[in-house]
Image (cartoon, rainbow, N blue to C red; front, side, top):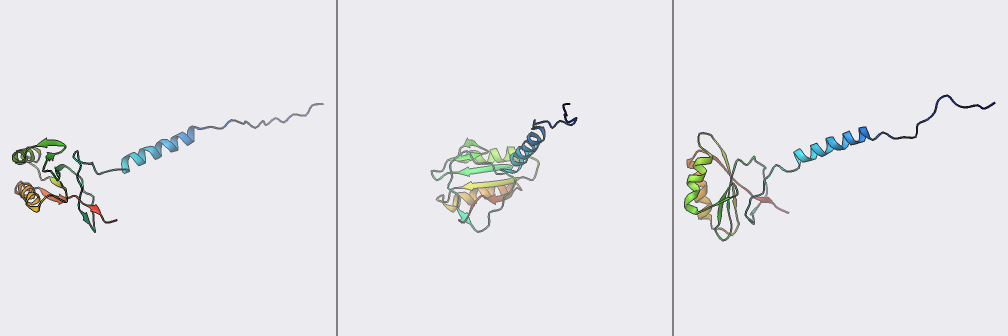
Length: 130
């Protein structure tokens, strides 16, 4: 008389729930990882005690050798006003200035003045103290 159990234990492991969790974690980290878009030109930003994160609608970058770019498009110094006017046309925008710390302040003031005249909010990008 052979006694066998009517309830067999299946040795297989279902991975479907684990793949769902990993997929959800991947989406979460992709959405929350980086809200700051790096500028196209290499800039050594100045440091500050507070470094707030703002949504960057328009970025203006000035390198230490005075190369200008607006939203990663390289422009001449004289073309900044026209480029900002086209990007901020008819709306209150946010302009973030990525100015190298070796650039004289007069260039920062000039670009900030152009953006303020176009009724945009102006922010200066900095890196936090270490």
